[in-house]
Length: 210
Length: 210
DNA sequence: CGATAATTTGATCAATATCAAATATCGTGG
DNA sequence: CCACGATATTTGATATTGATCAAATTATCG
Picture 1 (cartoon, chains in turn yellow, blue, orange, brown):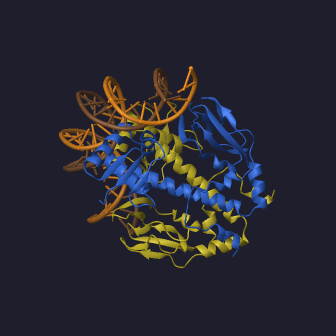
Picture 2 (cartoon, chains in turn cyan, brown, purple, blue; picture 1 turned 60 degrees about the vertical axis):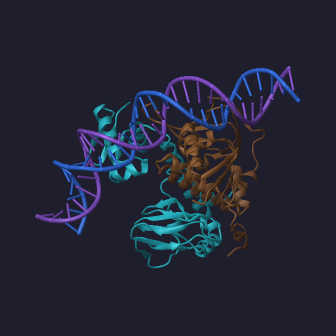
Picture 3 (spheres, rainbow over the protein chains, first blue to last red; picture 1 turned 180 degrees about the horizontal axis):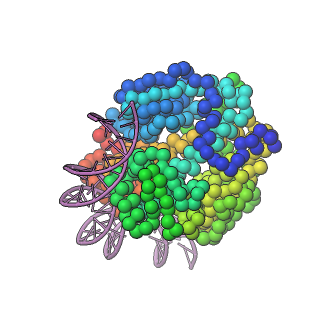
């Protein structure tokens, strides 16, 4: 049992992005124009990426010429982590808007892992947190009713202070995460408020007892 | 650069469940009856789990007595991986059906990590594959039209042989993954077949060119 | 202070959920 | 090997609800 490992055990579970922030990267970040391609499927995988600004779309191109979107990476998120374990990319990455993207070279990561035994565990911790988050998001999508979906989301968010919730982005953005139109979300919120289930004051929500 | 690391780099990207299969576990697996609780939020996290049969529901209990489902773990899937990095569970785990669950002790994992430098990377590889898969599933849910959703799913599945796809479970189960009722899925399939976009023969689907 | 984004509400429509029911298939114990 | 119960597949009728289209008001950010 190595003490180092226990340093990683804690109860706070934040973003755990520290693993990537500590790595060396290509300076400065790449600037992509909307529509520009960062990499293509089949290309030798040499790096993973961190979106600083803008939005990147990952697309799986298909034999018949069509394609399916695999993921849309928003600002502050990492994408193509799986490239760490594959020798070539499995999808195309295209800038959906103008974007700034940090490039973290795979061999820099692998070299760091060799010298720092905690890095792979910190990576795993970050990925485990993502898996947990994604599973919860997917589960939310199984709730058909807009009202219930929004309410469940609010309940999941209301972390520390039981019924208090500070929003860090507009409902417009939250609506997209919920898989609803912003109109549907605003209506659900209005209904919940009408029923007394929640109270709203710009950027802040209080959940009622029931 | 350590050679060991490169052993992990490959292009096949299967299930990567090897990391957990190699670990020692409590014999025999736990047998849970439907409704039985495996662990509760706040309890000291001592293990992660592998569902052998049945279905486990992970629930985040809330202050007001209500709860939100975080995840439903089906047979052959691992759950509570995040417990590896936390000292207590953050949700309740309840058997939704009668279930068989393998218990993999955290200290066995941590001990193995200490002696086997590749384990944490194999763990990370598995988690990265899950993240990729979950992101893709979530993205599918953004497609409103049942027809398009089913078609995109089919296209994503049709891996090796371009347009050929062998199903490993009934459409009923696939419908749940897609977030659609089975009726909607069957109707979408019927429509796609009528249009000539696909051909079906029990447990097998052929995708057309367009 | 102007422009852009966010919030809000209304009307209408289309599509999927639901409810129902019939047939086909599969798996299993006798 | 066959019968039978449990699932899976299929199709129909209807209802509900969120998507859409529209537009007005309010906030926010340089």
